Length: 261
Image (cartoon, rainbow, N blue to C red):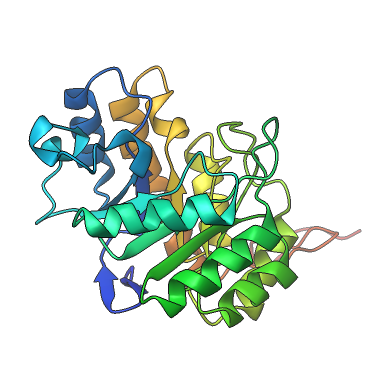
């Protein structure tokens, strides 16, 4: 039976293929217990939620053990390349990380990314030594351009952020993975464990989510379910599914069949 292998991004390896967010929880305590239940080893934190100018004043980061969990700052809420680049600079100057989940939003209603600005910011930040993980749409061409620009991974959406719609274009995710030589992390739209499993069965290297866990009626149970969904999907991908057929195939041998037609 194949073992679930580790996730390699840039110079780091993670045993978990689930990455979780830190927003929308009723309390920091609930957030920490959900992270624990998910077994995630990397969490993403919005730079705008952290007082990068005065870390002594207390912040979300005080509740996260950075020695045990990798902190991935994100540029959520940025609508221009310049603002996203500035947010990444603030995070690095505050000592958070030189890794960044890069978001440049192009539309308020859908929260779809502005791919042109995303490419521009990726090129600048890679040139400056950042490890860039851009959140983008499920367009194989854009993902290839981001990889060419130096992205350490590409993060195509499964569906709009917070929608819980699941993987809307599974064939696009499959194609993105076929083209990519960097990890493909499905980000956004995962609503329940079966969505996470589908993403992994399609060949994704990891799944990132926030609302799917934080917005559940029981975040702790959902965090565990998502962990199991990611693991099951990865294992199924490695095992290889049977071919789809239009007609039935008998499960039992035909030898010794009683009677005749």
